[in-house]
Image (cartoon, rainbow, N blue to C red):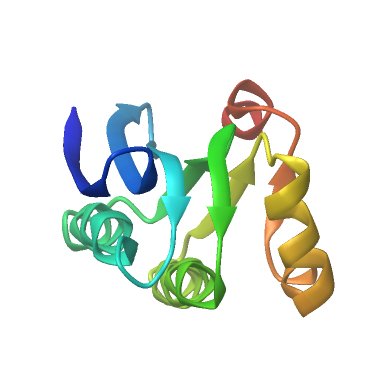
Length: 122
């Protein structure tokens, strides 16, 4: 399911796909996650939590950029998911996004997997 696109042309765009896999909600942002597009990711994460799915897998394999606003969306979802007894698993990080997590120290608070399949298997 495509949750929407924000921005224009090729810059500033984000599309978010959502699917349920067993007990996990898999959310796949594609494009650039920033101040202008963050709501497109936060909405399906919040919706999944509101529906009782507290194990969130974020497929980052097509996430080309993530700024501090995007990082805050992920951190906020993590706190909400953990409060509900679940967690946020990040999968398939591209080097540019992995670097943001490394620089900020956020990699220490997320469970990071090489792939969605690996995240779903634990």
